[in-house]
Length: 481
Ligand code: ZN
Image 1: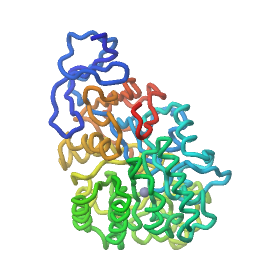
Image 2 (image 1 turned 30 degrees about the vertical axis):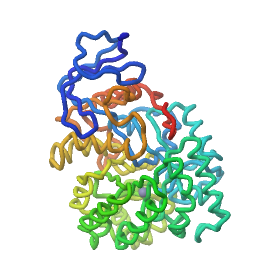
Image 3 (image 1 turned 180 degrees about the horizontal axis):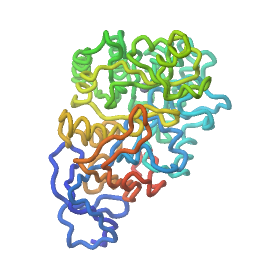
Image 4 (image 1 turned 120 degrees about the vertical axis):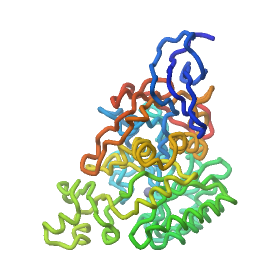
């Protein structure tokens, strides 16, 4: 065999399948893993010392809103690379940057992707631009149903008519053709609240033929979650495709503990349809600032506000007291704005995260002034807090939830496993030290214990510092790259 480009030597390999770790060297050539085993005598241009470290597949963040973030070369530390993430799935919750041309900022929550990059009339144009920008990590991209609604409907407060539905379905078919991996929905959010299950099923008609997936931010994660789950499972079944329930959680005190029932319902559905879910390892959520959610929460933190930038990072309740206003009224005054809601129970978070069907996804919001710490801390938090400290599950299981399971469920070929022939997306970390450092007060601190991150065989991040800002690729669905 010709000389290898890289040997990562001496580490404990956790291959992403859930199998127990083994001592092995990993040989890389032309961006692929070509050998695993004892490679001490094999010639290599570079050797990376991984003694005392875990060597695992690069993490796959299955739930992101990084559509806009990926277009620019990162300045300084990267929120995802620094966690060991090598692939992100973009366009979740019904919100994708394409296809939509708009000089004005589209309605919330689309504005979580910023105001200045709504310039892609076709989904393929976005993928081309991303390819040209050469992203820092790999991207697999979903088309947002709410984005399609904003594009084709003058009024969003009703079900799409036949003509609008056809145009949305055509856009999706074209996007799948150009390499989108599927459709995302956000029936919870104002731009899609009026949409029916039937509308989503009609828009998603092309998914089954293209072997695309559907990811869903379901209509309700609080009192009406049973009905919302039934609707989502019905949509997935009718579409006949792999279904991902986004950031599964239960919001509001009255609903704490109900994950026992929701997980049982998902398990039952899984006997007859392909379904799984993602979640993030925190008992606080984050999205647009919705006055209606204030009363459900023990605390609410403002993540950004156009009306009052100084509110970012502050507790809404504290601000309301200072200003002598009811919190709901202040929430209305701060619009447009985003927030973090403390309204989940830790028992539900642990139960959901520990479930065999759960994949890890950050749902981080990169453009928030004072973001939820999940943007920078999700993956190390699972490995440090939930595995090492709480012993919720094994390190092998954790890695599987971040790699092999995710790649299989999202249809990402030859990624997510350390196996011969797979792309060389690799993370080297210290199981004793790995930890999230981002907190609600200091949300953009890079994590600890992630030694090195290789994207397509190139060293992209070393001890939290970005080393190569262009090692990623656009993972076009249905094409090997
Ligand atoms: Zn969501």
